[in-house]
Length: 256
Length: 221
Image (cartoon, chains in turn purple, orange):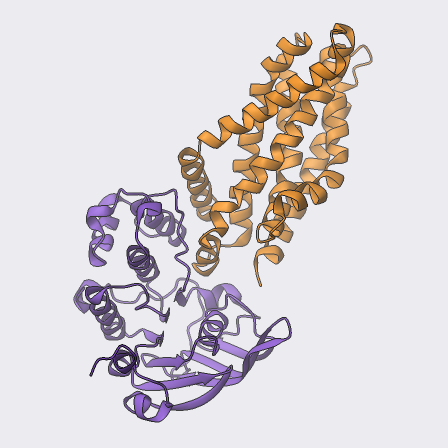
């Protein structure tokens, strides 16, 4: 997928327009716990509009929880988040209209076909839901030939591609990609890279949680490392591999 | 309104893809009616007298299967989460699901009427009114049933929890629906059916408005 195939970002209808310079994503002292275990502890971050942040950390470090909090899907137990200055506690609907999340779960209906799943999403989003409008979207993620196959027959990588297509359909201003490379093959990796480049060229703010440190660092200008729910390191993405203390995927796989 | 229309189209699509399930639920309901007839024995007067109660018991038992399954497709890959983030208003998702469940339970009720007539010799010359009572009664089952199905959908013992929570709440609906159906089958010399139907409609209005308001609290974090 080339950046040119993505539509320019539309302004959400009826949403309050943010003042110039308002950060796209803010978190202040965000804490979240599951039962007695704290998954996030005092996480602060601020991302200007159009920027990109790669979030790294070991399994269970809190990356997915952070993304679910920032996407407004779950509420922080303490602290505040804002999307373009909008506090989800005060105006959940307006904040949500600006955010899209690609999560670990495919979020699809297994019994429906790939095209039908996109049709369902398009209708909810108020976008054209015709076959002619949606098959090219599936083509963007390499699924045009499987448009009429039920999702239950898809491999994990194909489900991820379909989830990516649905996430892009939202045309959100803030896009959170949680483990976007997971389950994908090498062409899929390049697809995700192209999607991030395309989103940034449209002016979207992108957050990528990944173990593919080099890829993430190449796509984003800022980096953040979580450890046991706390921000352990933050800095330029180009220093992520050196400064984070995490093992790059290429080394873990025995590569260069 | 466009969100509700999208939700209804989604439910219709899902129901069509899983239509075999409706047949299975009908077989379950019909089997329950058959077992009740065995329990009473060949006493045709008693069968006819209790036929409305058996019909609603069969519907109630079968409804727990329909209602519990209605959130399976939303939860197995967390499709509901994606819709909340689009963002779709929870009320639209609730009414889409509840109307779909209502349609299924009504169809099931309509399909069980001939079974009841054959097994219990419980015919009525006011068939239209009986179908109307089934519509009102199943509406009273489907709104709280949809809410509780959402609440229990993530629980391991959801098939047990759902009836435990639902049955006490829908007792007034069942009483009114059974009484109205019974009067239509065995005769209504005092003209009480209209009052019972009105009572059912009142319960429906309360359940549908309250459950629509509460659904957001159930599905949001």
